[in-house]
Image 1 (cartoon, rainbow, N blue to C red):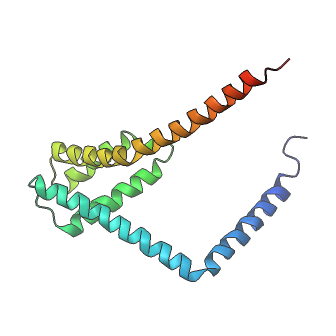
Image 2 (tube, rainbow, N blue to C red):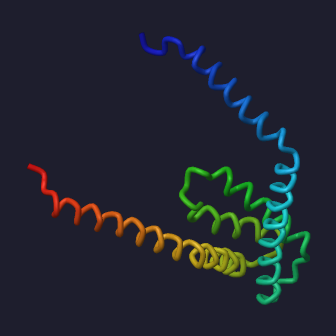
Image 3 (cartoon, rainbow, N blue to C red):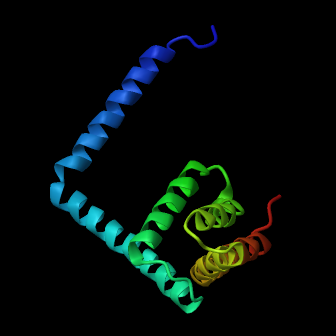
Length: 150
């Protein structure tokens, strides 16, 4: 029968999840350090955007940029189904920027600079991953040539 036992499976899964979360939150120092690290990185990203906007002659104060970045990350989180929020981030910057007095061009430039940072970090990581996987593929092909299957 379709769906038989789903309630029991759901309840046991929820209980397992609850135990895992309780184990995480028992480590209060680790959770607090994780929170602080996330906060520092978030403020650093805001500082990056603020500096970029200063160079673009946009006169927004740091707290305004912090609000824009906060709303942007909320929108990006809501659009989790879009890979890397491609297009979502750009549209959000344009809409949020207009709300706070940024021109669409300045808002789009800020978004593209953020994308450049993502590419600067992401492309070398993808290249290293490709290199590692290609090595594994070459080793597998060499093994197959030495020991052909009957």
